Length: 141
Image (spheres, rainbow, N blue to C red):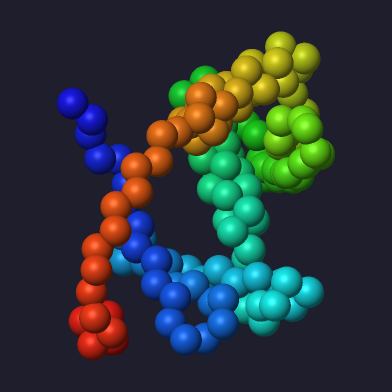
């Protein structure tokens, strides 16, 4: 039996591509850049995907370091999504910390980063089940 981990709801009104996302009482917005017909009033969908991966990675690394008694200082993670025709998509992650670490600590942090929950979901692929519900405009307003 599968267990629900998280839930989000997104709505798109009549305002071009600006999407309102509700998750656990928080409101986020997504949009497309101007060159794609949006008004750039929020991150684009792939930027949100990278943000989710970055957040999960940094939080997991901080939790791990606390358990080990390691001082990491400030953590900075830069991600790039790379796409090429005929090739698998790839994400590059570049981690920086403000405190000095040994080679062994760096290797362990990178190993932990490869095993974070969101990383594992992306690497393993995820099945998406789509369902349609018919409703009238006044039900959505």
